[in-house]
Image 1 (tube, rainbow, N blue to C red):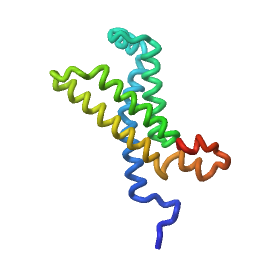
Image 2 (image 1 turned 180 degrees about the vertical axis):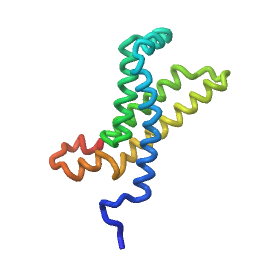
Image 3 (image 1 turned 30 degrees about the horizontal axis):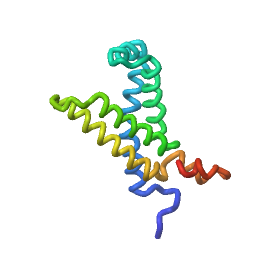
Image 4 (image 1 turned 120 degrees about the vertical axis):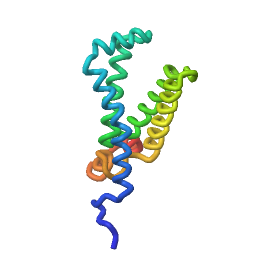
Length: 147
């Protein structure tokens, strides 16, 4: 006897758990940056980055983090966060003489890899994307392709 279509399989639950774990670091960091935006802007200034960049980073982390966690346009959110991790690794963590910097570099590469795998696999059946695909008629082909 087959499982009912509405009953999630173990793989779907594992994919949901993976999405939530991947999103957690970005939701936490983005909300921490946003909670004290003045200090965030000051910190970014010491790195030679402007206030709009600080606001953009916080917004990206929170927005794409929610995208991945909820499974809403998660392929786009995953690609954005994967590219963000690559940029962070190669721009800020290249002092390999420091074990801590090397660890952050490798962590960023690993998270980027997870995000790119998610971008290819999609959010799975326990996602807003899947709900919309099943329930909403007339979704444009280009939008369906990224869901």
